[in-house]
Length: 305
Length: 172
Image 1 (cartoon, rainbow over the protein chains, first blue to last red):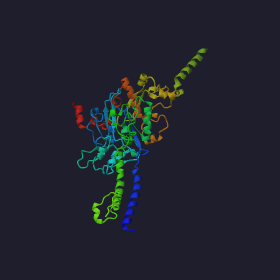
Image 2: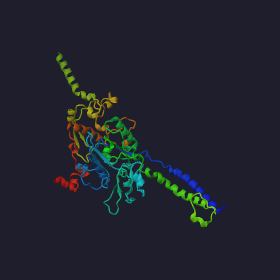
Image 3: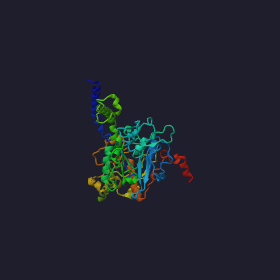
Image 4: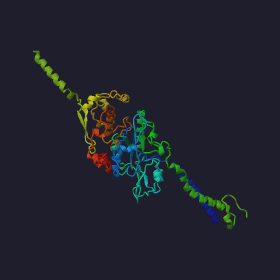
C-alpha cells in the first residue's frame, strides 16, 4: 500500500469516528436541578417591608455596616439592587392594588442552570446539590461576565477594592447553614414567614396549593418555576409580576441555550474540518504534479494535465 | 327534720359546682401569656389574653377549633365540623419554634392536607397583625415588643446606627 493511501485511510476513519462521537456530544441535554435541591418560596402577599431579612443577611455574612439602619423605611424611595454590601434588598412597589404597596425581596435566585456559572471562564461558580449557586472568590478574576449574563442583575461587585475586586452575591448561606440542612438566615428571621424553606419540588406543590386555596389572593403563577430553566427561589404574588419589577418576558430556556447549540458544534468542527478539507485537497491533487499545488481547489475539480 | 338533710344536699351541691372544673378536666384560659421566643432581640411580649377574650369572644378566631368552638371558615368546616377541643390549646403545640430545621423538614407529612403550617413566629404575626390593623390595635414592631440592645445591634439602629443616621435622629 502506498503511504499516501494509508494516510488518507487513517484520516477518513478518524473523521468517521469523531463524527460518531460528537453526535453524542451534540445531544447536549438540559439540567432540571438536583432532585433533592432545596429552595425558598417567597410569598409577596405576606411581606410588609420590615427589612429584617436584610439585617439577618448582613449579620450572617458579616457584611459591612449599612449606610442607614435596617428599620429605616426611607430606603424604599428608590429601587435598589444587590451590591457587595447587601446581598439581599427589599424594594417597595406602589401598585394600584387595594392591598397597598407590595414589597419584594431580591436576592440570587439560585437557578437550576445558572447563566453566571455558564459564563464564567475560570469556573468560579458551582451549583451544589443542595441547590445553592456558590462561588470561589479566590478564583474570580473580576471580569464581570457573570454580571452581564445574569438575567436578574444579581451579582454585585466590590468596586471599592482597587487591587482585588471580585464578584459578591447571596450564597444561600451555604457555608454556615445550607450545608448542614439549616435554613438561610433571612428565612429564619422573617417575622411574617414570607419565606418558606424546603425541597424545591415540595415548594412547588405548596405554592400551587396556596393558589388553589385562595385564588383571589394570588396570581396564578409561580415565578421561577420555569423561567430561565427554573430557579430555586420561587415567588408568589397578589398582583401581576411585571408590576413588581419582575421581567415577565424571560424565556423558559436557560440563558446557556442561547449559545449551547453553536458552541456544542465547535469540537466537531475542529476535528472534522481539517480531516475533511485535507481529504478534498488530496482528492483534487490526486494525479497532479506537486508544483501545481498553489492553484489547488477545494472543490471536486480534477485538473487534467 | 328535713333541715339537716336539705342543708347537706346544699353543701354537696355547692362543692360539686365549685369543684366541677377539676373533674371535667377543662382548663381555664390563662389571663396573660408570656411570649419569649425572640429574647435575644426583643423583650418578652406580655400578651393580655383576658383582654383579647373579652374583645374577640370567639376562641376559634385564633385557636381554630382546638379551644372547643368551631372555626367559621367554610374550607375548615368541610373536614372539621365535628372537631372539638384538643388536649393542648397553646399555639406552640402545632406551630413550631423552628419550622425549617432539618428535623422538622424530615418529619413533615407531605401527604397531609396541613403541609404548610406556619412556624410560631409567623403564626403570631399573621394572626395578630391582620386583626390589629382592622381593629386599631398595635401594628408597629416595638408596640408589642420593645427592642433590646441586641436588637438595636442587629438592626444597626438606635445606639448602633451609622454616624450620619444618628446625627439625623438627634438633630433634625
